[in-house]
Image 1 (spheres, rainbow, N blue to C red):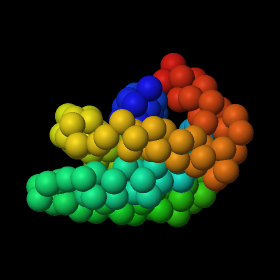
Image 2 (tube, one colour):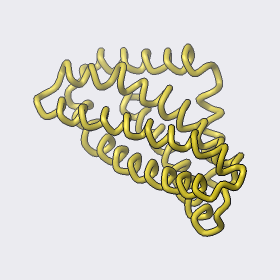
Image 3 (cartoon, one colour):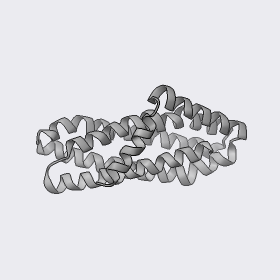
Amino acid sequence: MKATETLKHEHQIVLLILGAAERAAQRASVTGKVRAAEVGKMVEFFQNFVDRCHHAKEERHLFPKVEERGEANAKGTIRLLLAEHDVGRQWVKALTVALPLARKGDAAAVSVLASALKGYAALLRSHIDREDNGLFPLADRLLTPQDARALVKAFDQIEAEEIGEGVHEKYHQLAHELAEH
């Protein structure tokens, strides 16, 4: 499997959680309450699967290799994607701050939480589309077979050493569970 295929597959898992996040935001907006345990699992997923695993693969390995092999417009695209990663981290930080207060019934925190879930989901949907339909096809054209093998190995190393054995699969299962709610 190519490195970009791995990342696209991870995007599909992320999209499942984003659907659940959008539904949680809608419920919170309508009812003024949150399912704190469910949202807590989403936040954990965003912090660990999306940022520590998926974004780490892109930021440490794919993006630098594409820039090394790339053309001028690849650098601008990568700068935009990196900026979106940072905005995503800000949305997740807002969630981590709002969640404990929302759990206690604080109406303002529930509103912030709903907005942050919506904002994060909208950002990532656009971001995923930009990567899947822009950067990844470019990467597939630019990267050598040796680059591709090295990326897959580096991705596996991130999963094993930084995320932990079996944790990647745990988040896949969580995504499917939350997608059903």
